[in-house]
Length: 106
Image (cartoon, rainbow, N blue to C red; front, side, top):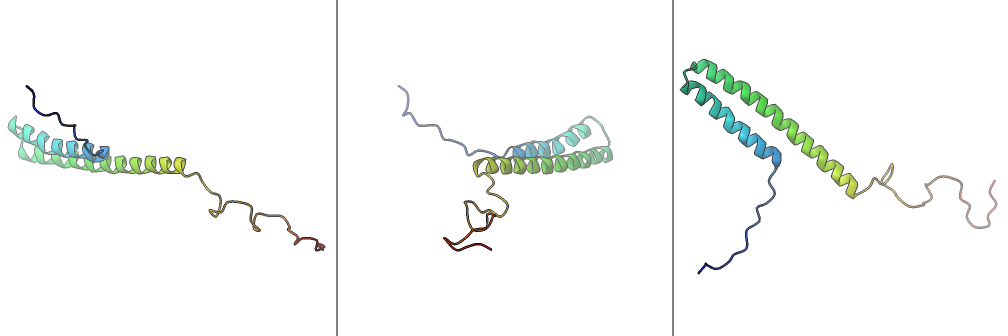
């Protein structure tokens, strides 16, 4: 007999840039530890960690910027551009001369 069947929980959509940055930060700790374990000097391991940290921070910033740009493009596709001053329709400010009924125009 099997137990009661439950529906699987849906995980919230994770931020890809955050996931990549977390793994990179983990590697920034793991790589120097492995270097020290295999006999590399502590100074070399620390400098390697600092270099990896700098690359991780730069890549994380670029990923976040790229995701913001993609989100902005998706938002523009959903809500199309409405014109120069966000006005639509044919109002009095849409160009040309407009006369009021049968009034002669000079």
